[in-house]
Length: 130
Image 1 (cartoon, one colour):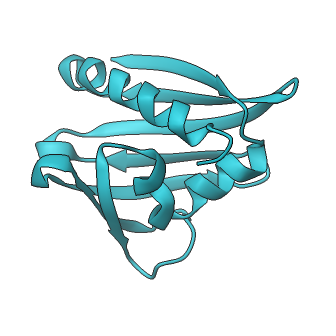
Image 2: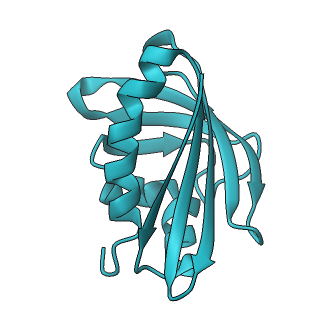
């Protein structure tokens, strides 16, 4: 199943992109993430992989598949509890606000279970101060 959602917020696109590009910042805006470890550190890049250490002690392996920093667009594959989800994140200016888009592709129960959590995380991603 493929599901798309979008959220508007006051954070500038550049600020939101910085929060995406550095996995070390993911736990600041994504409440489901405790921490992240990833190969080589630094910014997201195609082929980089790591583990999201989620709440309840769940470790979620991931691999970044595509990054277009100019377009503020990136994709990754995550494997929570043996389920494969493919996600594409986008950012775009909409007037004086930023729109964060997310496409989630995977098994119906996993997609529908993750969508509300993702919406909360995207709102926090686009919060002006943090």
